[in-house]
Length: 315
Image (tube, rainbow, N blue to C red; front, side):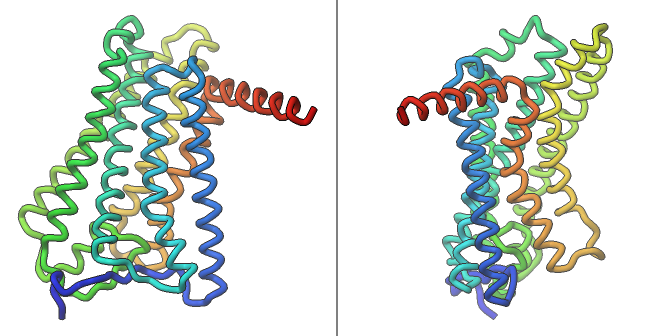
């Protein structure tokens, strides 16, 4: 039995014992991370370079891509390193940093998705007040609030979690440092302080979820009253990318944390952790690129410009 003062490292869950499978996981994660980096960087450059995308939704989409990049860069590189080096260790301070940044980017992303839902609500339900409610200063304040709330939430959870005495070994049943798995190593039940933090965080997530559901109920009610089918299609096309991203984010996270204990076993938990921590940041830019006409037009302009530059250089 050891306490937290004597812990110098944690043991992460290995994807496989065979060397061939470890290398396969490395190359698979490398491909996923490169796809996520390329797709999100493409979104960032497209929004930054095209003045038609200098809108509130474009601004929030830029911030969303930053959180997606942060989530991928927090969990995947260490998993790739462990698979390549045939190890499962992570240092005590490295684990604390990984937990902090993962909670930070995850909290900021959910806040941004809630704000983007508000953007769609105002654009469709209150179009005459769009410029007033979502001016440049208001957008900057809302984005700053999203990042600040994620930072504060991550700081409180990380500081409180690593102040608890840990004496249940150092093996985490996860491929990255995650809050519930670290709490399982505590010598006693979670403190009142940690319980309150979890309750407050869950309450905020629930309030955001209710706000998103209520907003889309109002949006669909207004859209279905639009007389022209073309107008309905245009309104739906602006909401579907965001709704798809929110559904992917919420469904994977809720199923991971709220599934019954009876169907919990290591291989399923590992697959679900990859599903909610790696897949959404990779698919989010693809969803917006394929479903958002403005993004597709901007990407088409950039690719045509790059192809013309390439042809000129060849000549």
